[in-house]
Amino acid sequence: MAMAALRREGRRIAAPLLSPHPINPLRSSLASSEEQAFSGVRFISTQIVRTRMKSVKNIQKITKAMKMVAASKLRAIQTRAENSRGLWQPFTALLGDMPSVDVKKNVIVTISSDKGLCGGINSTSVKISRALYKLNSGPEKECKYVILGEKAKAQLVRDSKKDIGLSITELQKNPLNYTQVAVIADDILKNVEYDALRIVFNKFQSVVAFLPTTSTVLSPEIVEREAEAGGSLGELDSYEIEGGETKSEVLQNLTEFQFSCVMFNAVLENACSEQGARMSAMDSSSRNAGDMLDRLTLTYNRTRQASITTELIEIISGASALTG
Image (cartoon, rainbow, N blue to C red; front, top):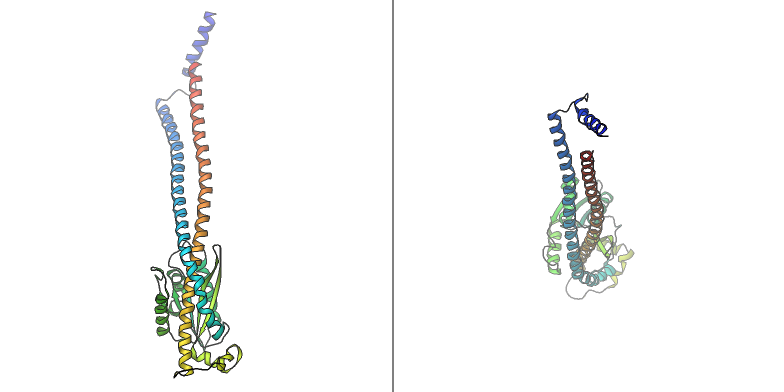
């Protein structure tokens, strides 16, 4: 039995020496380097996933904070927007709102936000403004843009730069009030010639819904012309004018006041829609970040488990080789 054991031991020792592929020390060192590299790749892959998880967590914190800020701003503006609706409604009842009126000089007042991350409210306003421009353009007609907000300006300046008559940005840098909007309305009336002002904005309905809206303010001459022609403005002649002012002066004052009131309501409505859309966008972003974090956690656990399993297999294989 001792001889048999000795023969078996001799065959085990002599096998590498008689192998057709003798052991190469350089190849052995390269193999060990490759094993270290593979081990490093496994380590780097888990490190990358861990870094990505950390960045997604930070983004989720930011989106949640932005949602809370938008909610607080929305509560502050919503009440003022609802109260401002009583300003322009009497003018609509008296002077009407005729979007289909045919005039020569049209001015499209596009109201948008200065900041992004608020869904598609700005793109919607720009699309409606471009559609109105096409409808009211012609060989004998003139159409200009007046832009309030950086986002609408950035989109319209690409293809309609020569048609922009006036641009105002950073409108919401300070809390909105009627005096501020009235000054802006006065600047618009002084810098552009118009027969009809078409104000494009987003009317606030709820946190998740807004309605693209167009309000039309006519010039005093067009109002007088439509009143003489009858129709919806034919009842203006039934009112008596007291004082020394003429009918043209009264209409001039009424249309200017109407424009400032409609502008004030439109700016507040659009600000409410902006904050509501930002709340919805940040809520969706937070949920998407949570889903991505779950997938990354699963990937990290699988990668880590695979690395541990591979290392255990290597240890067990090495121990088995040593024990023979």
